[in-house]
Image (tube, rainbow, N blue to C red; front, side, top):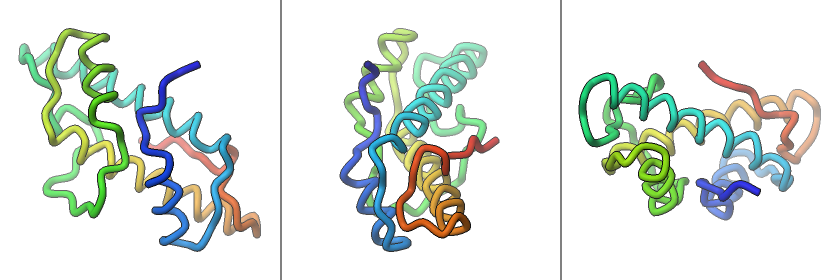
Length: 130
């Protein structure tokens, strides 16, 4: 079983506050996988740039100066994941960029659940973003 890189309670709260929707436990699996894949891609970009620290700009979904209220990923677990995968360090920007990613994925899932006339966000509402 994979370790969750996402703060489940904060993601549930984000979805509840954004749309008043509930969240099924199954929603977090594809969300977590997406974050892992994003980190692996960022690690490869960092290595190809010959740097020792994964930074916000290493994500292909980089957003300049994101405005976030609350970080939705577990910083210590993200840092451990990067260290275990690559021996690289992780900048604070990574947590911000990953939070933006989680918010975008949740926003799409809320829309999909709403279109299906449900008030619960489920794994089938998850969609990969480019």
